[in-house]
Length: 335
Image (tube, rainbow, N blue to C red):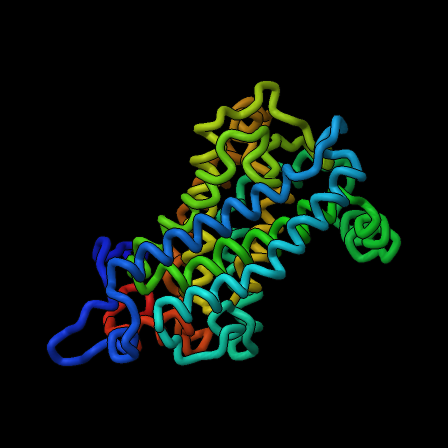
C-alpha cells in the first residue's frame, strides 16, 4: 500500500528554481487562488450531483420506477455537463494539461483492455470470501448459473429493471465520471496525487450527508441469490466511512490506470455484491472455510495491488503528464 502514500498537501504550481510551472508561465492566478478554484469547483460538482437526486418532490419510495426514472434524468444531465466545469477550471487557473480533455478524464484507447480486466480481477480477489459464500448458498449448480448468465432473456429482464439499471449502470458510470474523472484532474495540481486519492471521496461524502442514502450504493447482506437488507439501517458515520474508503480505492485505480472504465466496472461489481456479510459468515456452517476465503482474499489483494495497477501496463498516464507540466516530476503514484 506504499503507493497510496503522498507527500502531504503541497502546491505544485509554485515555481521551482530549475523549472517554472506552465500555469505561472501563462500568467495564471497564484497557487492559493488555484487551490480555492479547484476546491470550489469540486464542491459545486458534488452538490449539483447529489442535489439532482432530491430535486423531485415525491411521496413515492426511492425504489419506485417513477422516482428512479426522474433521478436518471437529473444525474445524466448533471454528469453530461460536468466536463464543462473542468474546462472552466482550466481557463480560470491557466493550467494546460498537455492532453485533450477526454484523455485527461480517462476516455482513451491506449491500454484499455488491461484497464478493463485487471482492476476488476483485483476487486474480485478482494471479494473472494463473499464470492465463496454466495456460491455455497446458491441452490443451483455452476452449469445452471452459467446458463442464467449467458441467456439473452436474463439480460433483457435486467435491462428493463430500473433498480438493476440504477445500481449496475447509471450510478457507477455517473458517479465515477463526476467524482473521479472530473474531480481528480482539478485536485491533483493543488494537493498532489496521494492526498487527492483521499480528498476526492470526501466531497461526495460531505455533499450527501445526511440524506436518507449516501448516493445509490447498496449496503446489504446477501444470502444465496436473494438480497436481504440489514436489519438496522447503517449509521450515517458508517455510510460516510464506507463511501470514503471505496471512493479512495476507485480514485487510486483511476490514477494508476489512466482509464475510467476500470473504476466503473469495479463500482458496478461492488454494487452487485453489496457490503460483505461478515456477520452471516461467522454463523455459517462452513465458517472456517469462509473465513479462510475472506483472509486469503484480503491477503492476495494486498499482494497484487501494486503489480496489477503498474502504470507500465496502461501506457502514458494523463494525470502524471499534467503534474509533470505543473512542475512535479516525482509523483509517487506514477511509477
